[in-house]
Amino acid sequence: MESVKGRIGMVLHAHLPYVISYGTWPHGMEWLNEAAAETYLPILDVCTRLAEGGIKAKLTLGITPVLAEQLSSDEFKESFVEYLNMKIRYARENEKEFKEVGDSKKVELASMWFDYYNGLLKKFVSVWARDIVWSFSQLQSEGFIEIITSCATHGYLPLLKRDESVRAQVCIGVSTYEKHFGVSPKGFWLPECAYRPSYLWKPPVGDYEAYERCGVEEVLNENGILYFFVDQHLIKGGRAIGTYLSRFEGLKLLWERFHKEYKSLEEKAERTVYKPYYAVSYGKEKGAVVFGRDPVTALQVWSGEWGYPGDFRYLEFHKKHFPGGLRYWRVTGSKTDLADKKEYEPDKAREAVKEHAEHFYNLVKNTLLDYYNKHGESGILSALYDAELFGHWWFEGPLWLEEVIKRFSSSKEVELVTYSEFLEEVSSFDVISLPEGSWGEGGFHYIWFNELTSWTWEKIYECEDDFVEILESVKASLQEIDELTFSFLHQLAKELLLLQSSDWQFLISTLTAKDYAEARIVKHYDNFQYLKRALKDRIETGHFKEESINFMKRLQNSTPIFEHINPFEWIQR
Image (cartoon, rainbow, N blue to C red; front, top):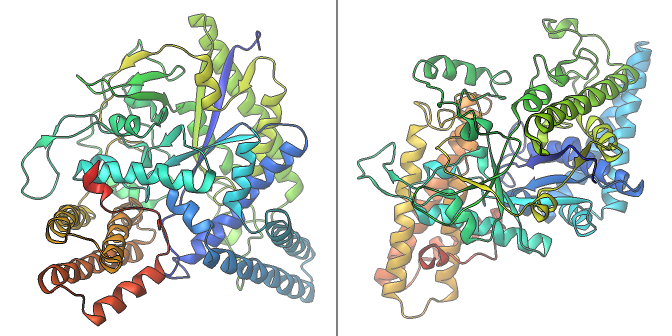
């Protein structure tokens, strides 16, 4: 498009930790079913509907390996159908209840919820064949979207102790993607957009000596990844802009203690987030293309205080009707108590969707036109969001997304692109070295490493070292690895990966599910220790105890994920 003055890439990052077999409600399987019903299927529906209308959504959709494994499992598919039927039943019961008390407005809303969940159920079964991952894969193969990968279990790469762990998280992320989508990924979402260059690094807990670490971009390069994303302050410097702070009280408390020590990075006026760079660590050659998150559109969409989701016409997230947990109220006002929320009015919410889609389109257009006029070249604006914002936190988000895509698809000035498409047109990049950091208020690690979570890293570091040690011991002691021993090592690897999930520190720091997260860390640590002892017994005695075999098989049944991985790859790379 010769008249195009700029491009926009919209990136949605979909992720949930492994919850199957680890609780149902309020924490556990309910999260996965809720996210599928409120976010993943609505986004799939939007992309499908646009495709049927001849419009390519051009979304860049990140699906983490652990999420893809869960959505593809029979356990999820059966549970999700039961979940949708339960919501349908509650909608009918609510409708009957509201009729009996003469609340006609809520009768209509209960009917709306019935249509919503009943429609999802029919499409899930009949249109998408109960396979969300396959359905997204089809959209990618037909050129409507691009799917990228991430770390195996969303491990927080800058704080992992060993390069073997970093490489395993990335390599398994790539191989799991290939398993589900049939091609190799080109892009990568760093969990929490957390990056660390190569340098002499010392673990933040424990009595360890400093040692040279590889840069994250080196590992991406080794695995064929072309591009990744970081927050804008890692490219430009300056203050990091958080998006989670207003949503979680726990983060506000942490930030009050942390911000006194926080120092903004020196601003680099010559750099911009509207062009890509080639990122390498100092003195290194292996790297990947990096795109920076646009801060203006980030806050405009993320913020519940002054961004779109806070509009008084939208569905209120926090107030629910029981039994059933369906929502019948709107935001109403920024300071309005839950008791004083007014009934939701869908027509007015749809009006707000169109207004905000138009506002977003003009915001992006004007930003890119301004960049074009100043620099004489078209830029690319990277709008990065957690997928769960759309539909879950912000019920109308998927409809807003559809309206935005429609506007860009017909624009003569701003083109919606996937990043692979964009990189096919760009032949050269400025080379930069990035500082360490992540997204979120403060831009560093405090959300994941603080006084509430430091103990979790002690456990992770211990298991990282033990895993490499046990692999080397088995390899040295046994001339041939039998199937049972391999199964123990395979499960040991999965327990380490699950222990490394960054979700546990986030849930502890935000105080949203602290007890659950702590229990999961302890559980995976204990599982790891039991399997490690069993493997040591195997080396010393030549066999496994029957009770150890039973324990391992129970764990296998509860975590049927990453069956394709080879634990010896940890020490062979």
